[in-house]
Image (tube, rainbow, N blue to C red):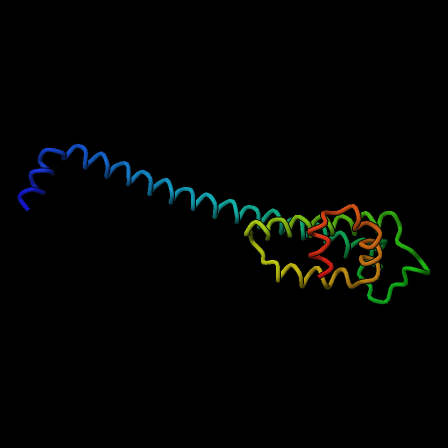
Length: 146
């Protein structure tokens, strides 16, 4: 015990400095974790806002009503340019959500897959997907078609 007290007496300033450095590191780690959580929440709010705007647009514009119909006949009356653009906007939103979830983000791949499966099972989204999937990220294509 005497050896330890002697060491502390001779090296107290080094011990205090080391404790300060360690404390600063822990405070930095805690701040980084809070910042990461804040960014995650901000990303969720932004994604939710874009998602809401996109789906409101689909639901409130009469010229886009066919997109969400399960009984739409894409052969008799193919998608219009505005319908294709709207479907592509949804696909970009899904791609963004997929990238975020792959990075360990705010939604799980399982949750996203359920939403994607429902959307792409509709006639118009399915036909636009088939027409455009060759131009999309191939890993995302595999995810959608799984």
